[in-house]
Every structure is written in structure tokens, then in C-alpha cells.
Image (cartoon, rainbow, N blue to C red; front, side, top):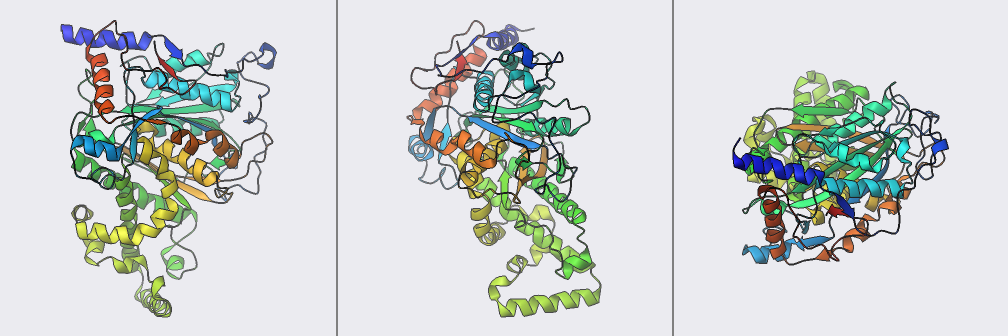
Length: 545
């Protein structure tokens, strides 16, 4: 082994074993009383707010029309992001680029920064500790804890094991750390859903943590840095439920669009153009099969869909969408491409209809559009050549991109603006990105009282390499007393207010923060953080000592 490799291994081990200190906070995790726990570590009672769900009735008038009635899903959610941030407009000036290159070109407003005093372990400790406090969770009532991250502190020891310090006396907790670029958190979430839904579930909560620090070398990708962590509480009878596990579709492929082959640095190797195409491919593959699956579950056929008796699932069928958001311009473009997929599916279905049905449908569409020109199908705005040409040939078509932006603009504003709000001012958070979107939706739409029972949320998660999943969540009213509603979660989050309380720092600090992190990775052990922390952390933040 070379001395360089030894130094890298040494610093990784030193960081992993570093004692973490918590910034002053006025609260602490409520200790469990010994007589409240069974011998197997599970809890007979809950503290408040979020209630153990092992004895809950599964029947509810608010259940999805399908599913098994268990309504496994999100019972609570918490977000952490560093207190300091840089505005994208100031970064444009600092970088000497034209105004609007980051704010308009990327669709971003700000990015969170942190230096060598925080790592994913400390950030995970912060967000999980806060989740336990806010929802008054007895640490013994947690039976699964799984982490998604790609910002590895150690190539062997997992972040999940570091978090066990928060569960003193409860070693009976399943789960591990899952790694696949930005997808690890979603893999952990689906694992948690499956565990809570299964016959092997012991009645305790699952907690899923998605945490990352997005860093890039100097160049065009550096404005897409960011940092954040999200912890999600999973159980049954949830107000935001994965009610029917069949409502999902996954894409998996072998591509090298973004990867980290050099373990001595945090920076990835990125092919930006290829990564965007891979994102499109994954979205379109997931979305096409997701639509087909929902249509089959709804009993939609080529005939009754054509007759208008049942509506095909399309880009305007869900009340809200949440996308993985490395930068928001990509989300806007990607949502527009869903309208292209809708038009191509409709065109294909039309070709597969018997002549008599096709003529009848054409006549009905013609009468409808003459009566109300605004009711013309969106596909009419998309040139027929784009409905038949190989999909790969549409990726670089700027005219088509403009058309799709136009036809999807109002729907995007209605269905994605709220879920994208946090990521626009926090930046890229890798595995946490899609969870940041869910939290943003709960905070903003739930805070307004508009995320009401009966509404649905479609989530698209992507990780380079590549893995992606699209799934649907349903908003419902829990039937058990003590379970938080969406409005309760929004109040506990107060995400908009917390993000507004952050401190803006000079854009030169981005270079400083990333250089301190680079030193940490190449410096060897022992290592002492040098990035300033005094007065720069939210109360309750863990940091490296």
C-alpha cells in the first residue's frame, strides 16, 4: 500500500471515530422509562404526537380504493440544512459569468454550504435527533433505521451505526446504509415501506435518513453544490400513504454519467450532457410503465379510454409531483417531456384502435375543439414528427423543448412549484433531494391547508449509474388518535421560516468551505476542523470536535 493510500485510509478512520459535539439546544431526547418496554425492546406505549401503530384498525373511509388497508407511509418528517448559504446572483458576480446564468439557466436562487466541521454523520445525527424530539419518539419504539447517502465518510463503517448513539439501550434495530448515487434514500424508503407492511413487522417505527453534501470541483457544475439531510418516520395508518405498493415503476441500467472513482476526493466525475439524457431516459421509462400500470389497475382499456368513459393517467392526473432536483431547470424540462410521452402514448393507442373507433374519437375531438378551442388536446401542439421519431432524437431538439415548456407551463406552476421551492434555495442534496421536495410540499401546501385527504402525490427519484423509481403517495386522514395530520407535520417543519432565518455569506466562502473539505480528505490523521463555526450553526447541530 502506498503512503498516499495509507493517509487516505487513516483520515477516513479518524473522521469516522471523531467525537461529535452538539451545539447548544434547549431540549433533549426524552429518555424511556424501563417499565414501558418489553424484553424485545419494543414499546407498549408512545409518548405523544406520533403513535405506535401496531394496534391500529386498518379500515378507513379515506383509504385508497386499492391496497391492503395498512396505509403504510410517512408519519413525520424533519429537515436539516446548514445555517449559512450563498445566493446564486452573488455567485454569478463572483464567478464573472453573465447575469442569469445560474438563476435563470439553472433555475436556482441559493445553495447551502458547509466546511470541514460537518460531515454526513454529524448531519444525520442532527436531523434524527431533531425528529425524535419533535415527535416525542421513544428510542425503543424504533425497529428499523436505514440511511441513504453517497458522501461516504468510511468505506466500511456505515452512517447507520453512528446513529445508534441516539438509541441507547435499543440495539434491536434493523437496517443499514444504502449507496447508489442519489437513489440510496429511495431504496431505503422502499425497504422501510416493505418492512412495515410485512408479516415480519413488530409494531415499531422505521426511520429513513437521506443525507448528503454535494460538492464539485471548479467548473460549470460548482453552482449546483448544496447540503442537506431529511429524516422520515414510517409506520401504518399514515397521513401520506404508499397505499398500494403496486403503484410504482423502476428503471435500472449501467451507465457512467456521474461517478466517484477517486476515494481521496469528494468530487465526482460528471458528464453533464450524458447525465441529463440518462435522467430523461429513466424518467420516460418509469413514467411510461407507471402510466400503463395505473391504467391497468384502474381498468382503463384502449376502448373505454378512447370513449372518454375512463381517463388515461397522464401528466395532469396527480395533484402534485415531486422530482429529484439537482437543479430546477432540469425538473421543468423533464416535466415538459412527460407531455411528450403522453402525446406519443395517445398516438400509439390511436394507431392500435379499430378504424370505426378511431373515426368516432376523431369526430368527438373535432366537435369538442370547435366548441372550445382551449380544450384541444395538448398533443395537437406537438408536431406529428415528434410522435413517431426515435425518442433519442428528441433530446437535443430546442424547438420541441420550447413547445413542451409552453404546453406544460401552467400545470408545472400548479403541480411542482411548491415541491421545488426548498431545493431552489438549498441546492443539490443528492439522496436527500427528493425528500426535500416532499418536505417542501408538506410545508407549503400542507401549511396552507390544501394538501387534503383524497389528493395524490407522484414522486420521481433518480440516481446516476443509474437507478430510478416513480411511485404514488395518497393523502388521507389517519383513523387513530395521536397520529399527526399533514397540517401537524407542516407546523413541526416550519421549513419556510427556518430557511428564511439562515445567514447569507460572501460567495468566496464556497471556495473556502470546499478547500477545507479537500484538506480533510487528503491531509491524513489526526485532523482538526478549521472552518469557522462560532455563531454559524442552528441550535442542536452536531459538528466535528
